[in-house]
Image 1 (spheres, one colour):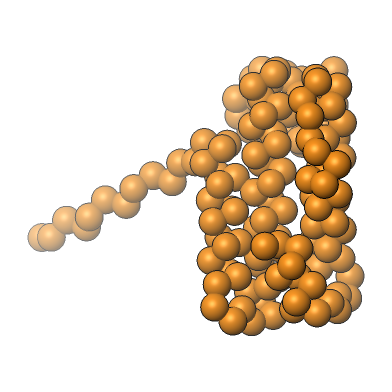
Image 2 (spheres, rainbow, N blue to C red):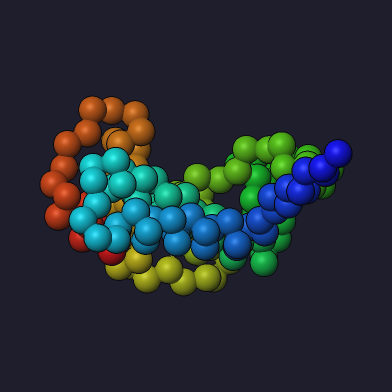
Length: 136
């Protein structure tokens, strides 16, 4: 009887997960991306950016990773079964902790967030050039 090779566990740290999403966005943008690839470039870049911001917040205090830090619970945190902050909350908390995000980066992140929201929740039309310019 042949043994099946064991499958590796899937494990990503917060930063590793964020960077993996960014890498996926770059891969989706390579060559001449299809409309589907452009969609996933936006979705994955947004997810990666927010995860990287959350990693920076974690450096300050793990409670900042809760949508409502006053209700932060270490057991829930370790289980990963909580609702985290959105982009606006991440940016506000970084500012509150004297962590500077340039105006240009802030603007680009908010444009990306807007595009991601419209892609996920509404009928969406935009030029490939505009999407590539924003995500690049």
